[in-house]
Amino acid sequence: QVQLVESGGGLVKPGGSLRLSCAVSGFSFSDSYMNWIRQAPGKGLEWVSYISGSGTNIFYADSVKGRFAVSRDNAKNSLYLQMNGLRADDTAVYYCGQRDHWGQGTLVTVSS
Amino acid sequence: QSVLIQPPSASGTPGQRVTISCSGSSSNIGINSVNWYQQLPGTAPKLLIYSKNQRPSGVPDRFSGSKSGTSASLAISGLQSEDEADYYCAAWDDSLNGLVFGGGTKVTVL
Image (tube, rainbow over all chains, first blue to last red; front, top):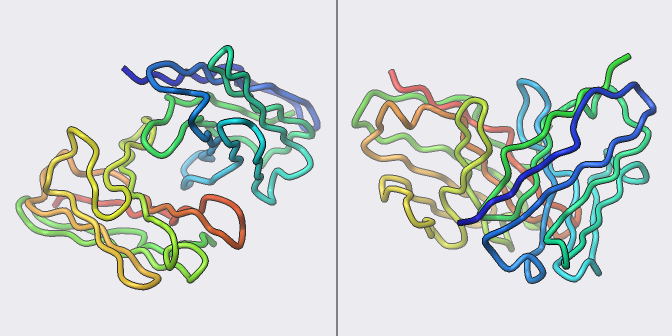
C-alpha cells in the first residue's frame, strides 16, 4: 500500500525557516520523480518543486526560487523541502507526491 | 491567474452529465498529458484521470477525460452526491519547467 507522510510543518515568524519531510513507502521511491505542491487556505493547488529520481534534475516555481531547496535520500525513502526566508504568502498546506499519490499534507503558517 | 484555465463552478442534478473544461497552451496541454484530480474538503488531491483518458484502479468509469489541441475536458456522467468536490486539471509545462494547475472547478450536485 502506497503511503506518503509529511511532517515538519508549524508556526514560524516571517523570515524564519522550516524543513519539511516526506516519508514514502509502497513504491519504488528511487525510481520516482517527486513534487511538492501547496494549497493556501481557501485557494487552489500550486506546484512548488520537482526532483527527479536520482536527484539530478530539480525545478522550482518562481515564487520560491532562491528560498526553498528540495532534496531526497533514496536510502531512507525520504523527500525534504528546506524553506528559508518564509513569508506570509507561503502559508499553506504542503503536500508531497507524484502523479498518482499525494500525502495528507502538513500545514505551514507564517505569522508574527 | 492560473496557467491552465478552468471555470470556477459547475453544477448538475443527480444522474446528469457535467463537463469541466481546461484551457492551456502549446507548451503544456498541447504537448503533455493532462491529469485530473478530485479534492474533497480537507483531503489530499486524488488522481482521477491520467494520460490518454486512463483511470487508476477504483475510479468509476463515470469519469472520463479528453483532449483536443491545447484544451482538455473532464466529464462526469451519472452525477452522484458524492461527486461534490473541487476538480483540478494539471499538466507539465515545458517552457516553465514546472507543473501547472488549473484554478479548480467546484462541482455542486443540486
